Length: 188
Length: 132
Image 1 (cartoon, rainbow over the protein chains, first blue to last red):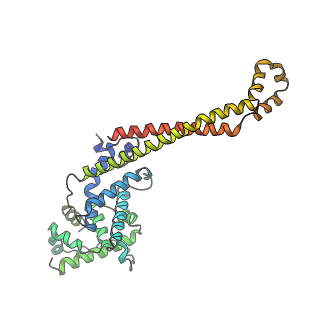
Image 2 (cartoon, chains in turn purple, green):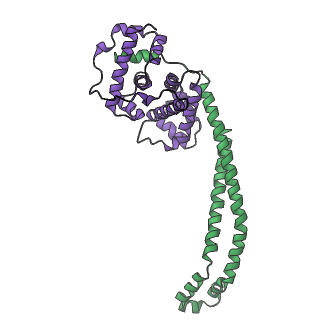
Image 3 (tube, each protein chain N blue to C red):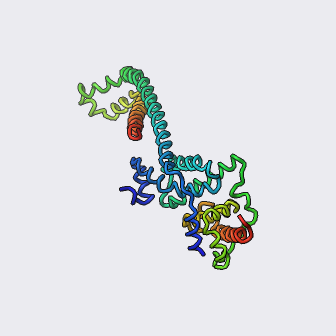
């Protein structure tokens, strides 16, 4: 019955005492969050981190303001912060560690030749694409994952990263350039 | 390029173990139960404590009411209504002055704590049963 409910309706149901509606939210977002977290902390650590993320969501769900942001954006913000904390604790590279040059690009990529067919055909192999993504710095990788895997707009990604939309577009542009460079000049 | 990349990224998604969401739900349920148990014990304890303090406070309140002459003033309502209607302002101020305000407020406060603690303890106990 609750499967067709929107996220916001499920939250309302949960806050009114229907415990099962939170279980549906977990089922709905486990794969998305798993994929996002996996790319930064690795397979072995992902279950623990995703568990922390859902516990934080559960603890703070009464603070979530439906009128201010989308639930998906909110949970990915929590996921990103949890991953950042996790990486910081382990003194691993942070999302912000490469924030030196943040000039913005006015427009989104329009140039189809940025990733030519040759490059696109190479990444049709899932394993190859995942290995290539592993080599991209976190702050660029997260933009690619959120945009292409989670269908988020640059504005939504900006909300998660707490950056202006133009900065996100700039990261996206650089990420595509890096992806192209890795695909065309490296044998993985 | 945009659509092609979206398709490729989605194809490359990792699949979590099928039991992962169930495991997360279980952990949340365990935490929820723990919190409910702690809450119901805390509220129960607060309720008991306020009840324990409420009894001597009520006794003291009754004593203070009789010491201040409140009952005597009040009995005038039944015995000498005529004088009261003539001097009602003086009567009312004497009656109000005879009220032991501090003890009365303390009694109300303890009674309020008792009711809230009882209500919350029942609520926490009920949510324990729901998540069990």
